[in-house]
Image 1: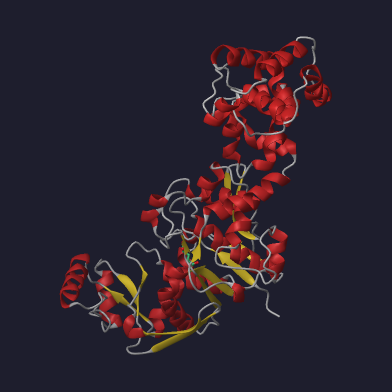
Image 2: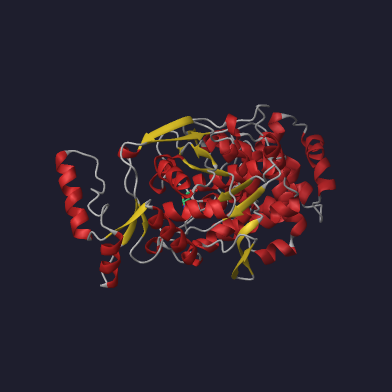
Length: 493
Ligand code: GLU
């Protein structure tokens, strides 16, 4: 049987969009599910849209997400390298190849030279607009003879090469998600295949490359559905076997609009910076527009590979729900080994000005305790500063109404003073000691339960809810606790 080969073929025009990551992911999952190959090809034939650094950031995002490819373009030691038997995998390095196939099309009568100037094309389009017809090339150069064309080229006239679509011709292809699609050639355009700068257009390059690279399945966003008939016609013109097509529904936000920069985060980098883990983002993203037969929701990459099929991809747009993403990501946050959580948290601590790497390295045990104290409650890394700030603030204030209410209780002063005098007797407030601490206070004061714990928690953290009290004692340490009790006595009792 033929080897299954899929490709992700982004244009390096900016950051990797979250929808692009999902396209890459589905390609990868299907390839791996079928024991096939996944390829990264760079489609940079639109030189005007090239963005410096986009290629690097794209590759970095795929790597971060854990989507590995078998062939294509890589970055190694800061250099762009290519691996695989079907290279080059960067289209701008394949210009001779495209030229050869464009010539073949002209030779066979499937393409023609067009000498129309931009001004003429603009005027035609303007007129069509006024008439209310869909703007497209009017075919003026379709019948220029080969001899005339060659002469005009020899005279230095600028030209492009266009696809010569037959008139009123039905082009049909099958899409694995959408079924059979037929489009009449009259609703399509005589697409430019070769531009005046000698570069092919996307439409020409994509067909030639998918064929030469033995791509079996073309899986891409639904915005390409309307271009597919032109591609299919090119396969027919060359006499090549066409790939299987899959057009994926667009990723939408909750109001069913396309995810766009204006409506929040859209790039993979944005999600990374927000503190989502690659496992969480990939797991959630797989579920935007696809569901496994098992209906499971927590699926690691291997589970996704095992369960992925195109027949469970939805025809309509997948809705991207940030809350659901948080829920999935929280699962992976809880699974993180404490050393890894610590490492990942450092940039967030640094940005919030709470502590730096040196401090973390000098106080590893304390930081581990701090993070394990809040780990269960985390959805993403960016929540760490907010959830840990109670141990840092020197300027201790209580603002919560309910907390202030607690301090009006009868035994508050008694409890706080007992804490003070007990602490004055210890040097080392470690976990072992902290475990028995409240029992000691209970014995000393005769106060227990809520009346004992609530005022203690409020006086130490300013909040009525929070993490494990024993951990709070150790994390704050003797000095900070005494200071805070001092502040509470002075300002709030
Ligand atoms: N270069 C196209 C893009 O960036 C690829 C489309 C396709 O996969 O055929 O969307």
